[in-house]
Length: 454
Image (cartoon, rainbow, N blue to C red; front, side, top):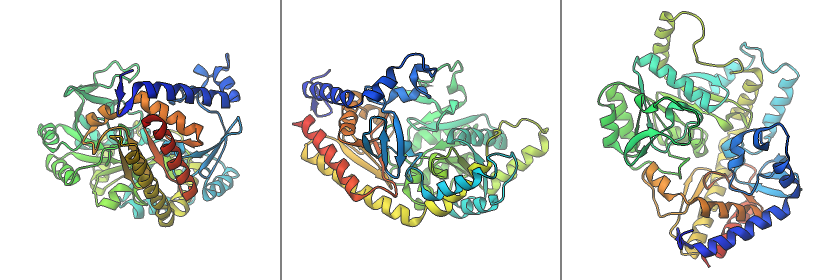
């Protein structure tokens, strides 16, 4: 370990990390036994392999969640600021979603046919996000994948363009990054044998000149981007960037897809509505049905007209756009309940007030510790970054990461009753989060920083 790591001495970090890991393990004998249980049937003992990537000695096994609180099988109650990495951004089991889920369960779960009330969902989506046409999928990964296929079909162009450091779920062609300025497949993508850089351009977020050069050949069907980079340390758009992005894509005849899966934290209509952005296509997943696996993707009239042309010349059969369970009855019922009763202006007002309280408290703790870190907030989404800011692009975000330091902080916070998101340092505030819970996290963060910074 280096002598200094992002303002913390290596010796102090090593001692703190060892003490916190031991404390965590002692407190959770039942979760520890579950994590080490042989022959359970799940690969490595977990239903999804990425559950092994939590920065903890082992993941706590959860018995129940309600509102902004989780309880694990050792009886430990946690204030949840991870909220399923946005999937439960409106809290665990919102009452309106529970009512819709319970009512629909008695009427069937999936029909592969439209359901009563589907027209309400379409109206709510149009009114909230501004785009006239919508489709329903199961995950944001699916929605992004389907939308990208459609843009290639409509434009008859082979390529897409993604931002270095962006995240769009399990969509292979977006797993392209920059290494010393050169495009390459992201090294963590398992089993990919195709050079994705042949069909995907990649540029840095906020780099208007690089974007213009990449679009100049006229072969890019679609630019896919988050409006704020959220998965590589949060990176905000610089002044004028989104206006330039929209101007250049229109000039090049390239469609613009904005993925709001994480930035729906901004407000009821997402970042696009709050900032007047005009995407051709929009994707939203994770929290849009209150925690039930549902995603939506919308598009404008020009894209719809293009799809009409494609359908007229394409034989009926497997389109690659949609799955059997897409738009199932349970999905539609919970989607309607979330849009109509959960994602309300009042809920967002509470979330933003408490998120601002959280961001201010974290910033004050960093200042007291005289650490070269900063805090970023996008609506109800807050992140502390263990490096000076602001960050400009995905490469900056990668350099700002401090895995050993972040791991110790995560364990320290969890030992003090607060769960934050793994893989980065993101925290979410939900409608059930109280000021006292925010203050609990701020206090825990200050305690951890005091131990680390001295």
